[in-house]
Length: 412
Image (cartoon, rainbow, N blue to C red):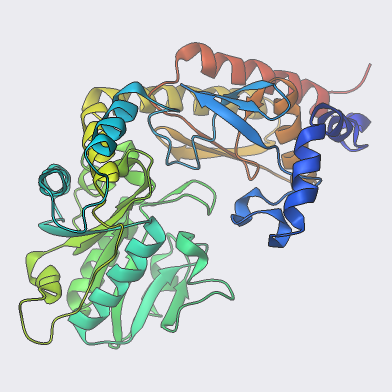
């Protein structure tokens, strides 16, 4: 088995450039006013990112007029596809009566009640505008409650890049290996006040945690008097009550975002009443939390509509299709020699090529799928939403088999 030369000689890339002249022009324009040409680092890849113009259901259309089957799903946020009628109607209705009052509203309370009824760890919660903000605030609340200063986080934890990059918040982070009990245990000391973990690493490669690891963190947090936070901004989409309920391990606090606001700007963090009451502004020496857009009516209304769509049945359907995709990809790439790691949970699937050419293969696979009008995460992920059907999974598997034949089979 050897790789066909065209996977490495740039032909697929040339096809991409030729098919997307308008995206290229817009990227050149954007680079004059934004670092790397955009405000989201995940969009940065060579030669330029594809620019999308419209979306419907589980499809996106590019500026150059090509419609793609979308398996990015707005980096996990688009659980309902694009412009779902129920969410669109809720937003339109909310805007018709004023979308931001600068005051409490009934719809805000209703959404809180819906969310707290699903998550056993969320006795009370607060809204914000993103998953990054939710984690930032949850950490602050957790440190204040524990009266400690150190935070145990996992390597490759994504949320806002605030624990593992130059944009680090002014906290003392201890970056421990994921799913490694022994490696983590030796880093946990009495001054650790917060332990934060994703029940499955999203940006870190769709790596599921083990129940044993989560149970270990729960035990250690209780032993140390630290606040255990589950970052379920991504993983909550895979279980009606979050992965915490799937594993039957309840944290002290939970953060969510993205799809619980119907795909609008949204985040939330919540936890045990004793912890959340430190935010009670009526009490002396409380923490102060406020934000202009935290309870805007359009997001609250979109969130309520989304909660009705995110039923046990719709989650299970997306998970079933995700498992079908995961098993199908494993069969395509690993029936003979093992060429890739396929992993994930439910509707979230990650693919990582093995060997010294993994980066080249990742790029080739991404651009190859685009030639088949399929849009996936450039770093190697598929994210299903409630609009996907079995025929869409079959389309990905068919294109993946074609890629495998071109990239790994001997040339004639």
